[in-house]
Length: 121
View (cartoon, rainbow, N blue to C red):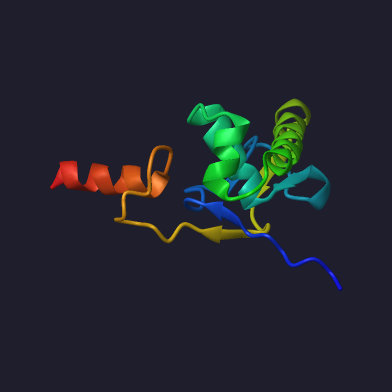
């Protein structure tokens, strides 16, 4: 019997799902695909400054799993930047955060958007 999938908790989907050079032809050889959970590890660790342990707690997965996801995500970022490939973010084994309005906590995009919207009102 196969092991059940352990879904990775993700705060929100990226606002833009494609990045890359503007002069690149659109062919499958010029694309790198990053999953949403890989994007979330980059966001939490590199942008928000979380440790791998804190990132793992936030995503409800093991630290060793975060380490593997993070390694693959950084490799894909490097391939896109160095080789001039388009980076597409889609797919993966994730579930969106459902804690909007419940004080989701530090590092959550949904919480930040809620605070920003209140300030604008």
